[in-house]
Structures are given as C-alpha cells and as structure tokens.
Amino acid sequence: MNLSSFLPELLRQPGLSGYEAPVCDFLAAHWKPLADELQVSPVGTLTALHRGTAPEPRKRLLFAAHMDTIGMMVSKVEGEFLYIAPIGGLDSRVLPGQQVMVFTEGGALPGVLTATPDRLLPETMRGKPVPLTHMLVDVGLTARQVARRVRVGDGVTFAQAPQMLGEETIMGPGLDNRASVAAFTLALEALQGRTHGWDVYFAATVQEEETLGGAKTIAYELRPDVAVAVDVTFAEGPGVQPPYGFPLGEGIALGFGPNIHPKVHETIKAVADRLEIPCKVDYLPMHSGTDAMALQVAGAGAAAMVVSIPLRYMHTPVEMVSLKDIRRAARLLAEFVVALDEQGEDWLTLGDEA
Image (cartoon, rainbow, N blue to C red; front, side, top):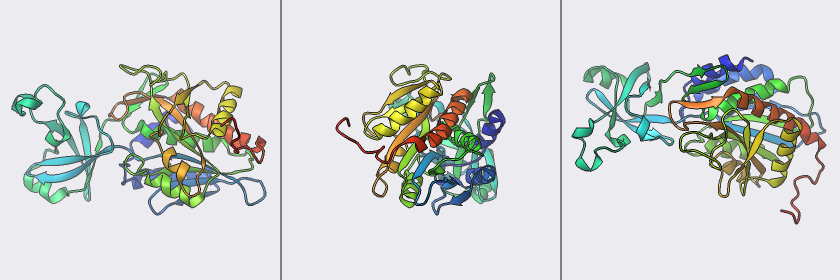
C-alpha cells in the first residue's frame, strides 16, 4: 500500500462520531483481502481477524483505533442559516471562516462557518474567541431552499482537503485517528504470509470522541486477553513541549500508567528497542483519554496498552502527522503480534514488582 496516496483518500471519507458508515465501507473494501474474517458490529465497529495457528482455544489480541472524527450537527434551521452543536471537542478559536460540508439526505452541501462580527457581539464577548452558540453555517441558498434540503441532525464536517507538506508530513482534518487506522492497514499487510499463535483482531471503532461505545462493545464481545488502543498524542509545537508533547517524525509514544498493564508495556518496549524503532514513554497518571479506558474494563477486563502517534494541532482542521511515525507504529504492531508467541503462560501475572 502506498501510504501517501491511501491516507488522503481515507481522510476524505465522512465519518463523524455516530455517522461512521462511509468510512467503514471504505475500510472494509481495503481490509477484506488482508483478513481471514471481516465483520461489522451492531454499533458499526469494523473488525478484521488475522487467525492464529495455536491449538484452540487460542489467546486473543485486540488492536483498537477509532475511525470517527469530530465535527458538528445541525441543531436549528433559521432562514438561510444553520445553527450547529459540537460533536466531540472543538476549538472555537479556529472555527470562523472554515469551509464545511453539510451532509443532507439529498447529498452534501458546501458551506462556511461564520460568526457575528466582533463589534456587534455583547460587550462582554468582544475581543474574545466566539463561542459556537454565536456561529452559523451559511450554505449560500435561500431560506426556502435551505428548509427543503437541510434537517436538524444533519452532520457537518470540515471541508479542508488533506495536503502533503514535503514528502513525509501530511496535514488535514481527521488524522485523529485515521492515522492509526492507516497504521492498522499497513500492519495487516505486514502480517500476510506470517504465522503467529494468537488470534489477532484489528478494530476500527466508532464513537470514541463521544461515548467510547465502539471499544466498549467490541471488547465485551471478543473478551481479549490483551487489548491495545492505538491513537494520537500531542506532538511538540507552539506551546506544547515535553513532557506533554513528543517530537514530530522522530518516533512514537508508549503509554504507562494505571490504564496500562506493565507487562504489556514492557514487552512492546522491548520489541521497539530490538527493532530500533524510536519511542518515548507517555506517562498517563490518570485515564489515557483513549479507547483503552473501555478496553481495560470490558467484561472481566483485559491487559491494556496505549500506543500513540504524535500529532500537531489536535482537533483542528489542520492536524499534522509524519508518515514515518505511522509506518513505525505499523511495524511495531505487526512484530508485537509475532513476539507474543515467545511469552510464557504466566506472562501477564503481576507479582510483587507491580
């Protein structure tokens, strides 16, 4: 797979949290030749199984990366304009003037996010970021046309086209977390023709930005022994420095904290060191803010881990990641699958050192 051509296409697929069907269909077409089995759960999570060779019942490894994105929903139609409500965390400072697409029953409508001019805002709000409640979407149609075509509940996404910056950096909306979904596709390719004992599931989960519903339900269904959430983390940039940010294009981050099983962290770190994949430890003293929160506690629980790809400008239309880091994450995941065969039966048992 050519990552520099696949990833822009992946980013162009609509997939707001709760509205992931288009991106799910796109991924299913690409994953089907790479998987022994493909399924879509009742809530919309897509899962690809790469079957192990050990005697049944086999241990199970689940990789989870959410395919949903942040965006907006039409909350009210008033004349020519649309009021909106957020889906996921939005930074209102960067929204005015952004081009958007409104997904209606009759097709997508281009539009622009507009805000009340500063001098017409209430005095207490002037000179400050405009809240979403004072923003509207203008689709350039008459009030009658808008009333016929747009309904409350229609989804609104950023229309910023993905763009390569140089040869190894990509910018665009939805890289949180389509970058990790692309890494899954590369990892599935890397496992072709290779044998491993465990059954391995790659899940493109839904609703991570709102409910964690995809991770909760797929982990409850599969009951994995080990569950690894693959997501993005903050890359170094303006106002984001260590220990909260990680260098863009210089490696990946491995979570460590109460949401993380120490033996799984230790094993993945050893695989990364053996392969000379640069990585840093991402200390997570509370929850990780990822699907791992749900994976860890579904059913009787699973040994959870977080692998993260550094990303700049999170939750904006101009998110940025390095293709090198996506490839590194993919290689690490594939080699971790094979390395599981070297672990003993009591591998996950926590002793006094925990």
